[in-house]
Amino acid sequence: MGLLSKKDTKLITDPLADNNPITIQVLGICSALAITAELKASIVMSISVLFVLGFGNVIISLMRNIIPSKIRIIVQLTVVAALVIIVDQVLKAFAYELSKTLSVFIGLIITNCIIMGRFEAFALANGPWKSFLDGIGNSLGYGVILIIVGFFRELLGSGTLLGFPVLGDPITKTGLYSIGYENNGFMLLSPMALIVVGIIIWVQRSRNKALVEDH
Amino acid sequence: MENKTDKNSYTIIFAIAMVIVVGALLAFTASSLKPKISENQRIEKQQNILYAMGVNDNDEGSAVFVSTKDAPELFDKYISKQLVIKNGTPEENDKAYLIDLKKDKAAAGGDPSKRNLPLFIGEKDGVTYYIIPIYGKGLWDAIWAYVSVDENMVIKGAYFDHKGETPGLGANIKQRYFMDDFIGEHLLDDNGNFKGVTVAKGNADPTNEDKTDNEVDAIAGATITGDGVTAMIKSDLKLYKPYFDNLKNN
Image (cartoon, rainbow over all chains, first blue to last red; front, top):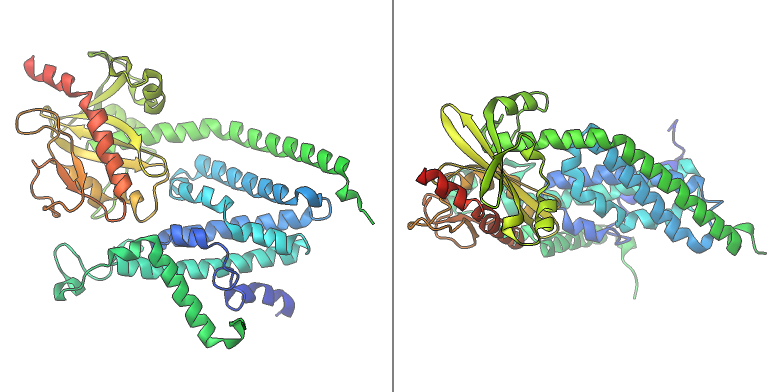
């Protein structure tokens, strides 16, 4: 690795699997349940968090030596809120269509616990470059889970992927529907997202016993 | 071993400085981008109105507006008249499409006679469309729509939109399969009284062949958004009934 040292690479790859923010740290569950009813929303949310967490981590890291420790959470909140509002305004002015797709996610980004978690746990103690990589790694790890959950929920709940019907037409009974298959409407509701996340956690821990806590 | 960032005085100064810097930054961004944003919103309204009267670039399954570049020109071409109905009296006003329904509703305080009701009359291929903007609330935030009807208050087209409904559920009111269900639905019952269109769960007509049942099929998992649509249609479109009664009598 020319550009990234071995330690830097780990910052990106660790959150993808063995230190995944959703399945291991159990952060960001709220948005993972709320917006994964379709694949497109999952992808858009992942990209939005990638931007905010990448830059937010750098900003917090640059400020880490001057932030008063007593009000550091408020400072973090202010940084992420300001960042999100600026991005929202710029999109509204120059990419109006995209901003309409994003509108609902903007508020959810601010409340995403992964962002506050990484500011607090990593950016306050590390340099900007490392913090940037950590932000990218964690948002990718978040995105991977979101996309997996979104994939299954949209496929089994609506019979489509990214809005394209892949299983046939449920109303005119073509494709899979002609042999009696039905969409599972329950997949579209949040409880099923929790169950899908639970299954991912189960699969991950059964493949890697080191992740299972002893009691 | 107290370091300087733990001092109360430092904390207070830092907080004040941060508020000033961030506040100034946000104020600057918002005010410098405002003209561009309101221009985008104005064009979007024109696109919505044109969409409801069938002037759009729809392909098979998705809802596509006319391009932002062409919208102002097409708006002038197809929308022949803009009216504001106040206490039963229609008046022409070519800025009617800029009326903010939310503010107007709030100012009227539930008294329909104080409302400024916008109505757009469009002509396409010799057919007259009456386009009505409506506004209501969904699960999380505002929902609104542009509905075009004919003289008998039969729906000819509809465009729904929302501010923050749940993606994949309530947000699907702006999908073609939901909006297109409204086309052909009657707002009046068989006796000519206003009935609206109900977004109904478990309705016996999921493929929507019966257009006189005053019902369309609901979206699974989006009950509150659907109820919001029903309520918005009932309360807002009803206000236009007298206009259409007059139209028929004259």
